[in-house]
Image (cartoon, rainbow, N blue to C red):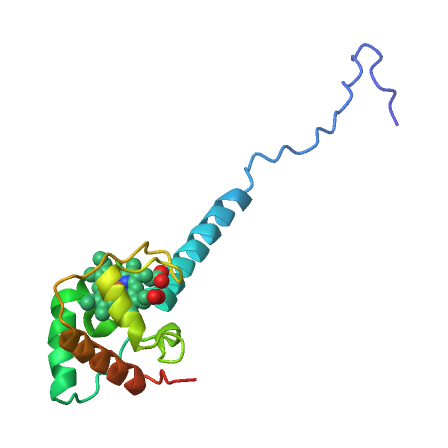
Length: 155
Ligand code: HEC
């Protein structure tokens, strides 16, 4: 084995640089995507459970039919068509409004004096002051029929 040339400068020491990982972690990005997906689903579920529901519409008798017309003209702007709920007010086809919890007098009170919001987050209901008692009775008959057809019973 020949002698190494003594005039040759010694090899510079080889530094083993730790490999630099230039790639930035994708973790925060995917976390954000996940967050957005979860948030959108929550909004969808929230809206389905509190704002609107699909309503079975039964056959109405004369009084109920009359109530439907009065409801449509005075209430559906907030409570939705078929009382299914809207962005302005809750569905009335809900167990909160079954006759045992909100008896018929609740309707007369809410219509005559307005109602302080307490079950949902829509705020208060203003009085609807142009309705006669017979018209309110027709609305109640209509709502009770809708409730029964959708499984909301006295409990
Ligand atoms: C301007 C919107 C609006 C209109 C119009 C409206 N409501 Fe309401 N209604 C509400 C809101 C908001 C509530 C309160 C919900 C809560 O408890 O958070 C409410 C509550 C009620 C309640 C429950 C009251 C209670 O004591 O909990 C009944 C019954 C009711 N409305 C019936 C009607 C009927 C019938 C009409 C039409 C004659 C009508 N509403 C018109 C928005 C409205």
